Image (tube, rainbow, N blue to C red; front, side, top):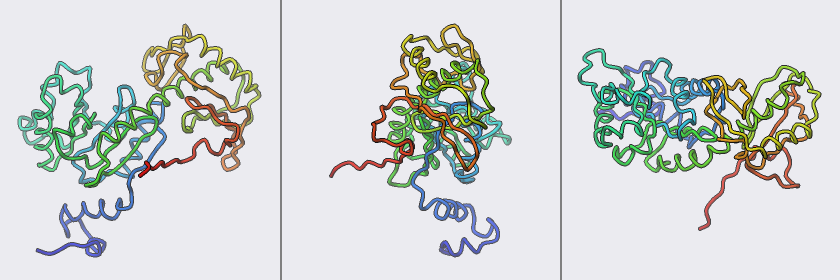
Length: 338
């Protein structure tokens, strides 16, 4: 049998020259060999989350991946990310519990020739009706036929499946994308990061909506939203005229009132009695009083590369007097002591 090496693969003109295993090696060993993981800011709007899903597919999805593991808490945006990664995919949602036992993954042999090539399972929901061993066996069965399975709550299935995902995605404050090797990272590692950090994203989105509420009656330039760690950023096309210290005081007063924040429909949220437009109604803390350590940066930052003025707010952390604004997005890699 001919041994295939990287140089052989690089000179191939067609996937037929090397077969599926060889092509898969191209993706895994060349495109991703130096990549441990990638972080993305997790968007708070549903459309932005779908757009991120599309980009992840373009950048990281291997056409020969069999298991895509998705990890994240309830209302973290998993479904929207999946819809962006796999447009048109038939998902089995928690609201579809009546039909769980009829989902395609568990009945792949009965569909016939036109069986789907990509399946979906929400393990947290499905395990109420089917054992984890049955779900794992169904996943093994369809992947052995060169089909793909998107597994939500992959960390729950992993002990029964006894195999890591080909592509593993965790959604918390950030979106973590990793292609695990024999040495990990394991799903519970990604889950711990995703679950513990989600609260910052919820606080940041809630604080961002409070900012919008406090400036809603003030004339202001056109803007678009962006992200910072533990906070939000709003980019204006020209310098706004409002007083940032005054706006911060109003936001802090609403936080002290501890008003309820309740999703109203897919595009609105209620803060107290006020109904406002929101692109991610589920991505909030339960009340304004749960927003911790809110701070609005007291100046408009000019971004010379794109010619806009930035208003930024942070939550969850207290900044020291010596900390510069450039350190908000500082990357920190902490090693445990030997």
